[in-house]
Length: 102
Image (tube, rainbow, N blue to C red; front, side, top):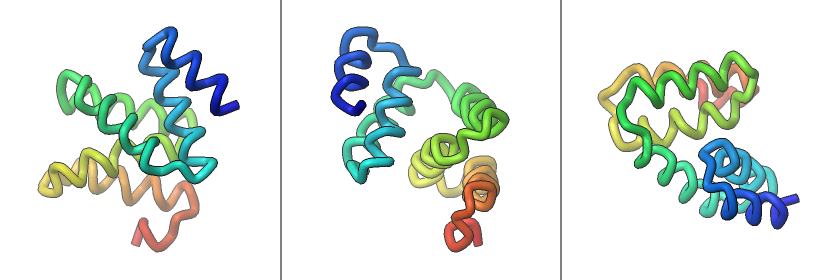
């Protein structure tokens, strides 16, 4: 599945395909590769409002781990921005990651 998604993401260069590839990488323990994709997607986002909208959309669709990954990356680079810290804590709790939520 990972190899197929790598080819698909490379061919289409669509953010949604890259997001799915990052999720697959995380599921199989390839966290460094997943982080690289998340960083790329964050760098390509035009502003914080777009990133917040993506996080909120994923939360509504119950894609908690994906939304948390986006929030985590942004919060690491801007720890003073409570909007990302709040979302990360909430998403971690919703995803059953109690220690990270605490």
